[in-house]
Length: 103
Image 1 (cartoon, helix red, strand yellow):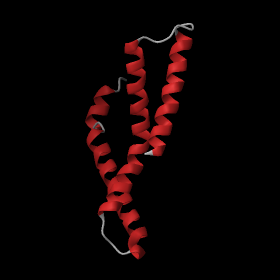
Image 2: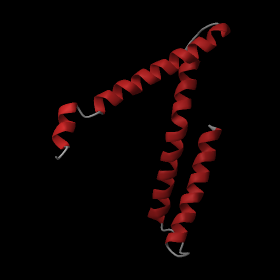
Image 3: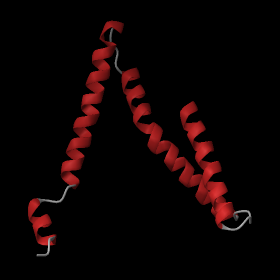
């Protein structure tokens, strides 16, 4: 929770200052403030979500304390396998890549 809040506030202030500088000292409008807040929340969640997911999965596993290291490895392995499978599904096939190249 604390890392999310810290990243959220920091990114909000940085984005807000960038908007003020871009508008030559004029304060951002209500819509701009809402957009900056949404973007700051997205940045913070993108950075902290993987560790939160790992923490919650470890909380759900009921094991003896000596097996915690194995649990961390198992959860990391599952996350990597899921990421790899998703990457393979989203990657264009060889025939698609060949049709895009122009000789």
